[in-house]
Length: 302
Image (cartoon, rainbow, N blue to C red):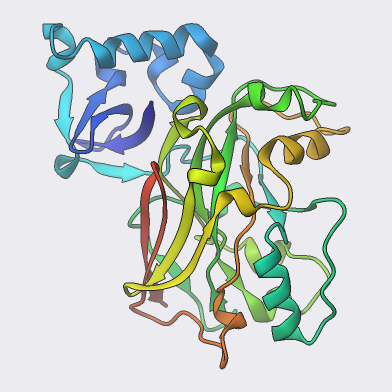
């Protein structure tokens, strides 16, 4: 299933795609049941809520009540599927060999393949949805950059989760653009400030349940700037799989339903080009992944 959060008439609503052009308004179909008021509440509702959403979506052809709540994608405005996560977005750095090698070349470093995942986070205030501007503030940065990242959403929480059990804790997958101010990021030994500015976490366009994603080797993550492909790689090339990431991160940190965890970016970032090319006012950045769709955001200088 492919869940979205959208507005129609000013109110945020939870929806599920019936096909590429049609969304079932679950908030309306449920009669205002709070379980279907947001993706977070649906995840909290567990398997029963997911099964009910699936039934309504499957019944639209025969159920008159469900069909009344169908709407066309052209008539709605998409928000981030989780417009405000409950806590910081967890992020994994250096999770593709291509990114590590190009990072080393760009910064004149030795190539070092990590033995454990590198974790950092972005504040919830960085999250924006499809179509929202990525703000280029010249007071902060002259080196605004992009990173397309396949991202997982936790469905069932826990701590000290084994790698073997971890897949059962994944609700689904979406996309994040890990926007980064490279001059801020490289000024210190930590990533938070250079990657945590407002609008630096575009999220979306949809969350696709894990059962529909299947084998990650079939998922290609791409990023385009003004239609030019800059990044393109199979998610199967991650150094640490989603299950391994969960196993490492949950060692002493409780993961909760609705947690957002990005899974790293492949090579091809702007600072890795020769010469480096950074984002500018008016650029349009598109992240896309097989089966999930396209996350498109303009760059707007202030």
